[in-house]
Image (tube, rainbow, N blue to C red; front, side, top):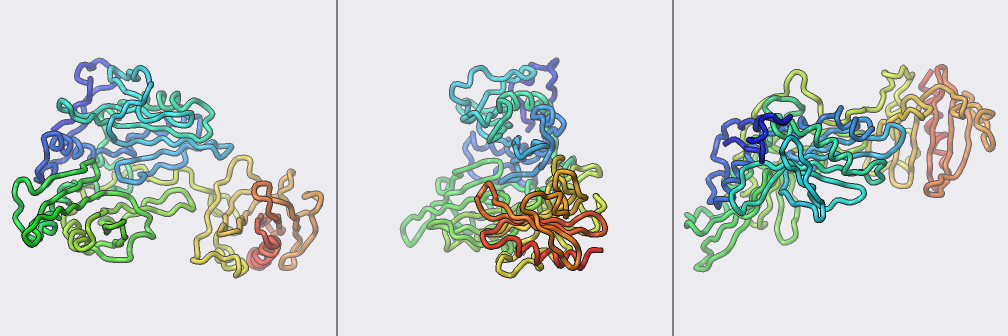
Amino acid sequence: MLVVLTALATACSAPIAGTPHAATAPTAPAGGGLPLTAEQQRLAELFAQVRSWDMCAMHDIDAASRATGYTPDELLPYREPGICRLVMKDPGGVSEWELQLDVFQVIPAEGAGQPLDVGGVQMPQVRDNDESSCAYSYPIGSPGQGDERWGIELSVLNISPDKPPCDVAREYVTAIAPRMADPPLRSAGATMPALDITSSDPCVVAAAMVPVMSGGQALGPDALDVGDIGPYTCGVNATVDDGGGKRKVRASVEFALSATEDVGSATVGGFPGASNPLGINCQVLFAPQDVQLVGNPGQSPSVPVVEVDAECDQIDALATAAAGAIAPAAGRPGANALALGDLDPPPTAESVGAPFDPCTVVGGWQAYPADVQPTPPRPAVPMTVRPQDPFKVGCTFNAGGIFSSLVWGTPTEDGFSADPAARGAGAVAVQYGGRPGVEQTSTNTGNGQPTCYSAVQISQGIAAMVTTLPDDPCRVNRAVLEQVAQKVP
């Protein structure tokens, strides 16, 4: 079934043209043969189309730059495989615009006024918009009378916006409307890694759990129904015989994203997984695809997972049945696929010609005093270097009450130096590994804690540290720079 976009058929001469591509024929009927209502069946067929769309390829980074005035920072699925968030950042500061694409019910915003007309397609303003956010929805599907309306939703967010969010939303959604009219398919391989989980239908997976829910009983026509249904979720309710009485059993499947460290404590149907309590019920999740989605430095990678929620006495058997119903991969990324993740990675020591890598030169945290090292261990995080920063490459070491950075660069006239005279009042001459350096204490204006700037002269440039710590931050800098001075020519 082709998805017909609202008003598109009468807009042949408009800048938006065409209809979304048909999805690859599924291996099972949409909805998995479950007893769906007429509306649910229409939604199941629509959602099969939605899962075939590459939401991240629907974004346009150049258009986002024009709409926000910011530079690209990160492009990554968010919370579930069908949500894709593009983050744009202020090149000279910390402000960010988040531009998010999702498929969601069309819920017009209260008092929103006239919809946005894009090539004859009426896009209502949706959700609760405020001074920091705004959203518009591009209607999709051919809903029956009384059916819920669904749309491709663009939402924008900036906690401290420098322009009205709805201005940004209108400009950006107008630019990407042709991609909404003719959504890019995952099978085209425009982005990488491929999200194979989207080849599966959550209701097909839920249908595989029904024999476990019923205990092998044959269920009558009124003993099974579908509750929640969405592009990436499906819930099933069964009424089963229970010692002469009747008992209601419920289970649900959802495709989501989970932090990699939350997966792997168990094995589910041959896949790495985990088990979690969920109130009076239980949840088992598993990762059917060996892929990680890696974003900005310091953020935990995520992995696509299948979450099964049900009563605890059946949860393991249900999850195993679900794992056996996952569809095979549909395709591979193309040769010119855009890599999802960090769009503006921090510089590396090699790229700037630094004589050492601040993240690894002294073994990460190993040179730090034992009492400030994190437990459990955590990696050092490469630093983003802004145009106004005096250093060329750096790494942060933050844990608990310590905030520390080790950087490399060449001396500047505004005080990035290992010379006490260049640092000004309070700077004292010290030596690290027999090399000349500087140490200067101050107070962190953000938290009022002691802060120490330290730097040592090396053969090429300087190694410098800034550490904030309630208990003598300079001792931390001394411990680290002593080793840097000994290891780096």
